[in-house]
Image 1 (cartoon, one colour):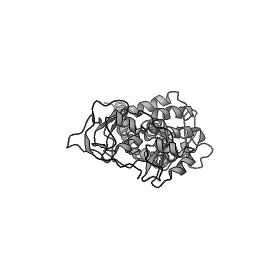
Image 2 (spheres, helix red, strand yellow):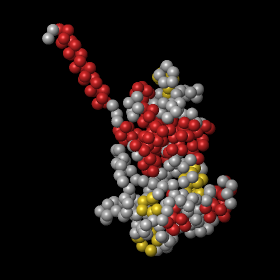
Image 3 (cartoon, rainbow, N blue to C red):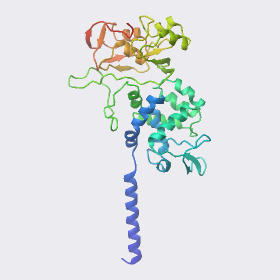
Image 4 (spheres, rainbow, N blue to C red):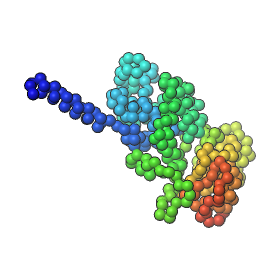
Length: 340
């Protein structure tokens, strides 16, 4: 092999090595989700933006954590400078050459600014009136409000959410689901069709985190109110009759709230937004009806129950039609409502 051939061979080997190195350094979508899911969950709890939407946007805008813009700027959401931005910037080719993009010191700062960007603009305000689990409404709403120019932007977000089960993280943020692996990627598991075997652990009900102010669950206006809140004050604030407020929420009286809870400003729907609710340890029928935005009498009727019954943890409650049989019960005793 002559000198020129040796040089060419060396360059070929070097190119192959660099290619392998570059591939090895690339982040997968699963790794992106595992790395940043806790930031998305925290921002949903703080600002009300669905964690699944935040993660899907992050995946798309950063090419799964591998974009040049991300590496230059920690900018996970493709947010351009705008006239209000006074922080560091980078130049990046996007719709035009050399556009100005915001630069952040950390991923956490980028996630927080993404929340501030959406919360601080009137054109996105209508999104916060949606059910936090309505990811399709959020995806199409972002495009309608002008977040992105790609005409397929909503469909891409929805595809990521469904392909990578990102809705689970919104459920975790709202306390509807427990993260089985809080320090790593969420394990995708099938929901049990019936009661788990005695050896299977059933997650306990967790304290839910909801956005401040009015939002929607199951297409119904609702607020989250702390214990001690006056129902009369809520009725006055949201221009709802006190008697209607009591009726909408299946309450027994119009006293102050005895515990933190969701308070619906409209009559709840007869059917749930999802077909099934898996009972968590510590949940009563009233809790479930409020969490799912379904009328208590409908929940009871669908599942052949009455208010004195306690479905066992792990049992499936039907929210959109008649259950084939009554769920297994813990014991027959009087359910304690949120009101005294």
